[in-house]
Length: 457
Image (cartoon, rainbow, N blue to C red; front, side, top):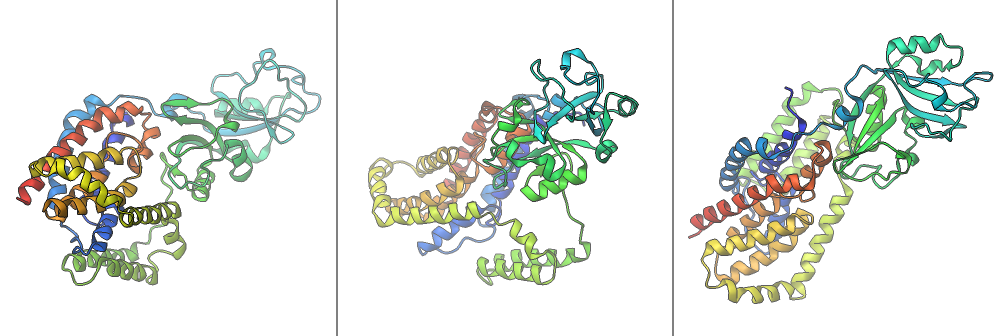
C-alpha cells in the first residue's frame, strides 16, 4: 500500500494491548491480578467483568490513533530498504581464488572484479576464518580465499567465464532472498556474539546488518552481541532461513514461518475455545480447571503436538512471575504493604474517589513503563486491596484500575513486550513512543477514573 511500516507498527502494538485488556484471559497480567485478589479471599473475576470499561477505552484508543498517529509518527524506511535498495540481487555465489590467479597479492583498489554494478561482497573466508565483508588496503588476496557474493544473473554468468576465479558449484545457482528477522524475548541467540553463532556453517545463511535503536550496524558484525529487539538482515535461501528461525526462535518479518495447516482439526480447537469462554462466563467451573481441560483436549485430539505446545512456554517469564509473587508475599508478611498504606491514607482519606483512582492509576502506570507489567501488578495489587479496605471502598474497583494501568503501557518501548517487538522493526526512537503514547496514557487514566467513579458511587 506504499505506507511506511513506521506509520503502522506502533498502532499495531497499541491495538494488541487494548485487545488484551478486554477479557480476563486476554493478557497474563489480568490473570495474575485475579490470582492475587483470590489469595485475599475476594471472589474471582468473571471472564468479561472488565470488558465494559476496557471496551470504552479501546474505542477511544482507536479513534485517537486514527486521528493522530499518522501525524505524530515518523516516516522511516525499513532496514531492508536502506541496506539492499530492493534491487534484483537474487543469487548467492561463492568463488575461490585459485593458484596462479592474477588476483593473488593484489588489493581491492587494484581490481574492479568485485566492484561491479549489481554485485555485493557478503563475506571473505580465509582458512575457514571470516574476514568480514569490507575490503581494506591492508588485505590482499591469497590463493584459496573464498569470496561470498550476492549478484545478479548477468554478473553470475560473467564470473563463470572468468579465468581469474573458480566457482564453487554447491552455491552457484542457489536462489536467495533478503529478509528481516526480529530477536524476540526468549530468543536463543540473545547475549551471544554474531560471530560465535557461525550462521554460515550451521545454516548456510549470512547476516548482512543489524538494526538497533534506529541505527544500522553493518561493520564488524562478528563482535556485535545480540540483544532483544534487534532486527537482523539475513541473506540466504528461504528454506535455510526458516530452519534457522525455527532453531533459534527468531521471528521472520518478511516471510511467514508456518507449519502445515491442519484444517480438519479446526472445529475441535474452536469447540475447546468456545467451551472455555462459555463455561467460564457461566461460572460452571474455575477458569484454571477449564483451561487445563481445554489444553488436554487439544493435545489428546492431536490438534497440536506436545513439542509445539512446549515451544510457547517461556521459562524466563514463569521464573519472573513466581519470583514477584514471592516478593509480593514477603512485602505483605513484613508489614511493608500496611506501612505504605498508613503513610498515604491520611493524604487520600479526604479526597474524592476520582482523585484516589487517578493516583493509583498514575502510580501503576509509571512503574509499568519502567519495569515488567506483571511484576508491577503482583506488587501493587496487595497495596490496592489494603488501601481500598482502609478507605472504605470496594477493592474490586481498585483492582480494575490496576488491571488497566498495568496493561496500558504506551509511553516507552520497554513497558510491554509488543512495544519492544516493533521498536527496531519500525526504526523508532524512544521519543516516538513518548509522543504518541504519553497522551494516550493520560487519556486512559482520566477516562478510567471517570468510569470507575461512576460505577462505584
